[in-house]
Image 1: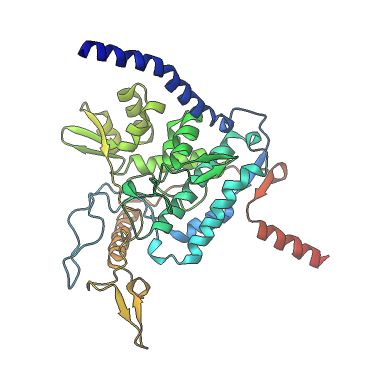
Image 2: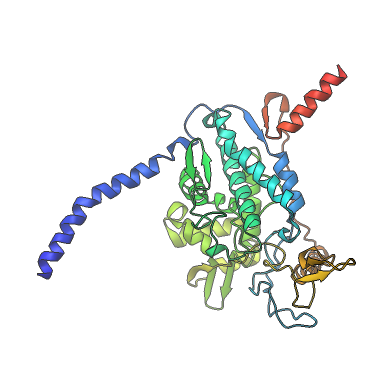
Length: 396
């Protein structure tokens, strides 16, 4: 009976296999409209200056890692309760200052994300240069992540977080629609960018909201600079502990490389080591070149904010304060910097001072300025364009 049942299951599997393959092919085919190799590429550019301005206001630049592991939990006066991130990587990666957000901040980000989402319907998207298209996807992904963590704040368990207003996981929910196609964050990363751009540098364009991911920049991705921006992100990530760590007998690297393996590292050991070496400084290169086993197991899913979702401003456990008129206010509005944020800032300042003494002051870029007269610029800030036109009419 077991043999007959097994034979029947095999027969059913053989019959179903073509249907499964056909369904997978059909699902993949719906992303073909986003293939950047299709169409004649023009010289249009998208102006992301509005997004750059937003990012510069809401992102703290933590700076380069000094590869010193964060150890132990800080102890606050008056309590031993610690609500911050206790990971060894907790002082790495740029941070979003979510504890200072008010509704209008989130509303502005949501409005901008919606503009980005609708943009491909307003122009010949496939005619954009592949670099312009890549910058678009990275900016849309980042804006959506920032919007989602702001809407869910102070929740900070990103690996268990649902997309706002849904019962689906944050990265899997179809919360976007571009050119009529419902898309998830995973679709943008894997089914569009990883599929159509055959360069592992794109890994570093996907800040997923966590401390352990590639950094969030304080400027938007631009078509003319996107590869330099990605390389800069890559160097920061590879030379940080959350990118490449080690034990005496093993090289530990970020799990982001394991996730990207099917796309960029088919010859796993050789290709991933060569990629790391292309971005590593001397100290990290020495680790990568050692003859020891490699494991892609480094992860840190803590939220890349200033406080790990905590708004406590002092040692007291209470989250409310009493104002002069006797009313109660949430402690998140107190004038003092929350303890977790203060500790992080102090660490960053001390680290920067050490690096400045050693002659390390950050990234330097040399850029060729394009001839703007030859470029068609698409500015997403329609209000600004209308104000400019109105000013010109008044002047005339």
